[in-house]
Length: 332
Ligand code: DGJ
Image 1 (tube, protein in one colour):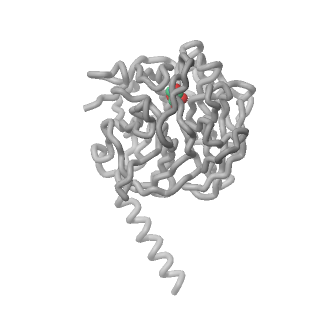
Image 2 (cartoon, protein in one colour):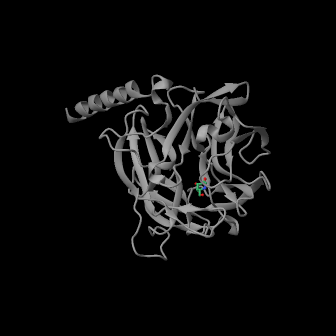
Image 3 (cartoon, protein in one colour):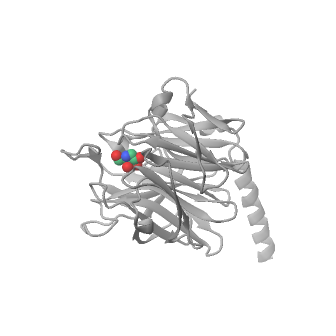
């Protein structure tokens, strides 16, 4: 009897899940606004990444915590912000977001610790390892001057966490700043990051458990100074959108296409079209989300940084359109 009740409950929850997946793209789009969770609180998840797992979208982002600190005397980086850890929000429709707590807690008064609130923790991304059954989070860990430049890795048994921090690494001895994570259909996973003092990007294959970089990596966009990588795959081709390096100020995005994640990558220019395309509609890309219920549909997710008060930064989520194998992003 118990078994039959369980089966019935499982099938009801499964059909509810599918009933709730994204029905209409316009509902899920955000035009440079503050986003609120279902309790009416502003969503604090910047430089975000989304993981879709068993009918639920999990949104992870930087908890910007309090006013931005002005660091005088630095040219390329005028602002930093106390690291507040990584938040998690969950949704079945990409519209109603439930706060699911702090996925990765910062630590207080421990300046030698990578997660100390005086450090920088940016651009968290999470993927699921089918083999180890663990959720793996990678993020950019830095010190105030952005010269520590490491990838931090954390692990959890459940999607929303809490995540256990395992440490920070310089893949193959190289700097890692703005980064993203990509899990391919064959379950191989890659770290993509600004390296070599932001001059050149690297794509590095991760170990099978996703916890370590391997020695297999390529250098791409050599001396092009690109950051904020956002990658996705459509019909066998890989697309990588990046921004230029102008701190928290917006600039023109650019994208590249490849037949393999390790390249070669063919650069195709700015995917944004229309007014303010040259400043990515005042945003900087963070992630491209494949809409699971609509194969071939993707949402470009950007941060509209408020550089004097990063916690008040807004979000820009726009549909990504295909024109053959070219992509276009419009801000209607
Ligand atoms: C732009 C990056 O993309 C952000 O993640 C952050 O690192 C800022 N630069 C710092 O200036």
